[in-house]
Length: 393
Image 1 (cartoon, rainbow, N blue to C red):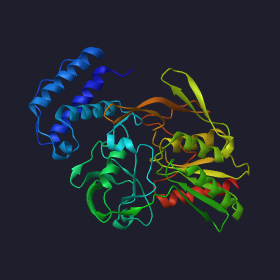
Image 2: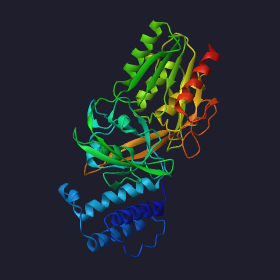
Image 3: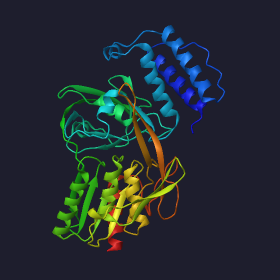
Image 4: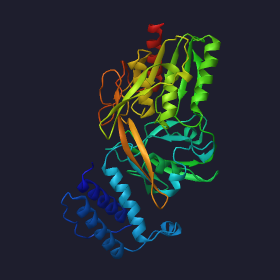
């Protein structure tokens, strides 16, 4: 169980940050905490009542949403508690974001950048991928850029969902984004456009001998798209596959399980719940392609959650080689709980372990360690993946 003092201090840190963002320097005595859940939460409630009375002014946009000061501070405090856990599958969603949770749009108005889940000890959200032929690509944004502000507002500590919501907007309007790249700030003014996010990108390499599949996220009808792409590449005569999961932040667990099932058979990972019981996450025979083909799974430090499950499962079952850099170490199950105001709190209820070695995959410094470690240059990573595949052919 989480330490009540950790949660309360996280809530107060979040409130302090919000007040400073509003131009106020908070002045109050923090309560003395004992570690008793009932006592510490009661002290938090008293402190929040005091702050709501002392600093009653609300941002006009917040007032438009129909919130009063106490209710707004409740949301800020809940967000702070979730972030204090430093768990990538524990986070808070506002009512607007909760409505679209795990339901990616078939079409949206934005710039074409995929945001990586914020790691527990990182403040600036990172761009995981730039989709081809999009405003983001034309403007010069790059994977690995860390977003500092959106339209002049800091997004430090924000979740991927929160950042994406702020970047999206009406088609034809402009959003200004300041990123940090190689220690230097860069500003981009980008005109939003109507976009359909790609989930699966496939083509052949090496004169038609290698099938290349890039899966950008595990949601929507990604399993069907991947299966059809595999079928088409097999029909064209490819003799091996590169499954590119770089910059894939994860998504729906069942979709990741099914994608893994296309390429391997057996236990993908083991999962340990809050009850301490360990269970196996196994493949789904419905999706398995029995044609034996050499396989390389390409990953990087922004491959998270479902991507890590697939990579770990392929290796554990001896179905392929993992190439790239160590993955994000963000592997678990977040259970959504809807709150009375329509907002949502996701809480980590299970963590994952390697099916073969039992090694913990979730946490700072953890993740899937590739069989073939590469540098960080994207083009060279793909070249190294093809070379590894040739050795298996």
